[in-house]
Image (cartoon, rainbow, N blue to C red; front, side, top):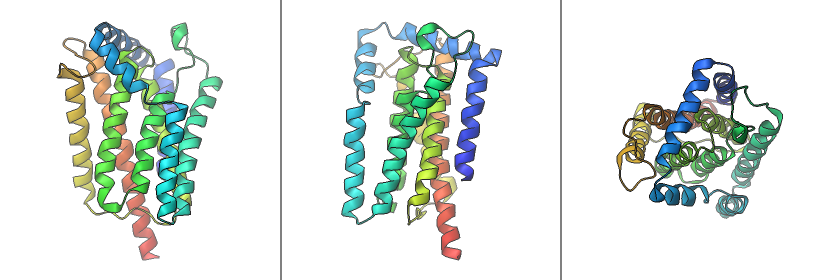
Length: 262
C-alpha cells in the first residue's frame, strides 16, 4: 500500500510539473521538439512504428490471456486474478484520467488529453505482470526485460511527438500503483533471491545500457547528438521505469519477510 501511495503521489507530482510549473512545461515541450527532429529519418519512423504497434487492445488481451493461462497451469488462481486486475485496471484508469484531466494552458491541441500515456501504462504493466508470474529465479531477468521494453516504448512516444516525458512517467506511475494493489490478492509474495542493492544495481545497469543504445546506436530508434532535452528525457524515463520495477520487487520481498515472521 505504501508503494501504491508513492506511485499516486508521483502521478500527482508529474501532472503538476507538466502543467503548472513553468520549467517543467518548457522541458516537456523542448523534449518533444527535439524528438521530432529525429523522427525525419525513415529508419526512425519504421522502428518507432513497429514498436508502438506492439501495443493494442488485441495484443494486451493476448498477453493477458497468456499470463492467466500460466497462472492457472500452476494452479494459482490468485496470480491469475492479480494479473487480470493489473492489466485491466491500469489501462482503464489511464483512459479515465485522460478524459477527466484538462490540458495545461500551453499544451498543443494535438496533445490535449495526453496525460497519462496509455502506451506507457500498458508497457510497464506487462513487465510488472511478468514479474508476478515467472518463477522466483527468473524475477530479475523479467524485471530487466520489463524495464527495457518500457524505456523503448517511452522513448518512441516522445520521439514521435505523441506524448510528453511527463505523460510517459505518469503512465508508469499508474501501472505501478495498480501492480501494488493487484498483489494484495496474490497469496504468495515474491521470494527475494538476491540482495536488494545488487538487484537495484542490475536494473540500473540494464536501464543505462538500453538508454545509451537508444541514444547512440545507428540502428536504434533515435540518434541524439546535441539534443540535450531528449537525451535527458530518455534517462529520466529509464530512471522512473527502473525505480518502479525495483520498488515493486522490494515491496513484495518486504511483504514476504513480514508473512514469514507472522
